[in-house]
Amino acid sequence: MVSISNNNQKQLLSKIATNDGHGENSPYFDGWKAYANDPFHLTDNPNGVIQMGLAENQLCFDLIQEWVVNNPKASICTVEGAENFQDIAIFQDYHGLPEFRQAVAMFMEKVRGDKVTFDPDRIVMSGGATGAHEMLAFCLADPGDAFLVPTPYYPGFDRDLRWRTGVQLFPVVCESCNDFKVTKKALEEAYEKAQQSNIKIKGLLINNPSNPLGTLLDKDTLRDIVTFINSKNIHLVCDEIYAATVFDQPRFISVSEIVEEMIECNKDLIHIVYSLSKDLGFPGFRVGIVYSYNDTVVNIARKMSSFGLVSTQTQHLLASMLSDEVFIEKFIAESSERLGERQGMFTKGLAEVGISTLKSNAGLFFWMDLRRLLKEATFDGELELWRIIINEVKLNVSPGCSFHCSEPGWFRVCFANMDDETMRIALKRISYFVLQPKGLNNKAAVNKQCSRRKLQISLSFRRLDHEFMNSPAHSPMNSPLVRT
Image: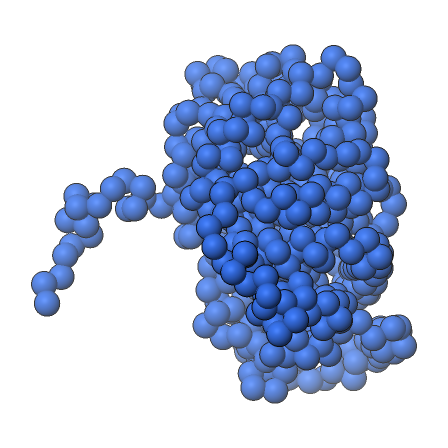
């Protein structure tokens, strides 16, 4: 067998196939690889890496399973639903099943507190939010054009919007001194800097609720953002995929509310990305949505959607589930309560050992401040600390530099993708690490010191465990569906 050198591969293949645009070399994805190579398991691998880098909502699968069991006709793969098999299995156009689009529109309204209405005919399907973002990038910009993006932002945006489209992302620098809020000054400065660099700005991308911050944009900030994009005549892409993960006040305000109130707003510039991956916990279903107020974008995006459609079997099941208003109201309320309990327990446990987090009320994660643990206040220092956390503490938390954070020492921690016992083990690992004396680099010495402190730390967490065990049992791992 003849092997081909990397240089020859680059000559044989396309630039897209051989470039690094996917961003897989980021520490964000390196953490996933570390987990994949040594995954934690309560019994089979108790010393493995705990996955805290995956924003996945696993806290309500018991509710989902109960609904599936009670509604067998919703699936064409059951005795009760098999009579619809042929109608669903044959060719469907890329508009999507009418009942699916209607159900998604209703769910989007419910998640936003029934403050706005959505037209099912403006809903365009895609293969997850990843496909939705790329689809919009193809529709709104040409190679070399750019979108402004407030920092810190989701690392996957570099892949979703840039890799195959040739579009650039230009940072709007936000800082910890005001809790990373998006300000008019920061927007104007970023736009002006791009102009000076001869970069054509075609739009602004915002993430509300924010990934990785877990915070919401208030009404005044949203008004400022809409005013800004109108003054520049650029597009606004609003990623609202965490809309139903809000677990405390203030409530979530969608950009759709703002554009209805602002008569002077050019609605042709407003586009929403949504999915069912986070709010329902269905990333494997690959349901992404583009909702645009621009008729031309809707028509073109629908044609593009043929490259990443949602299977009609999935549409059929979800149309039934999302149309069940009693179930949806119960699910949204219960999910919010469970997320709030889990986030509160996690951040409280960290606070007990002196670790602070950014105040947040949404998302499947929080923004952890480890600046005081850095040997030096640089991104190299952040990566050095991250490697220790990955390789020695055995926790996959994501470093702020992979989110393009402007300041070193921040880490994103996901809390909804694990059971209760794994959460407690993760907290104890962090505690051992934080409480160990400085300068103990010898592994044996560290282990000895950890043993001496074991009783003290266990007592510190006894109350935490007691509180959690006496709260309602919400562990998703109790679900037979998850175990399967």
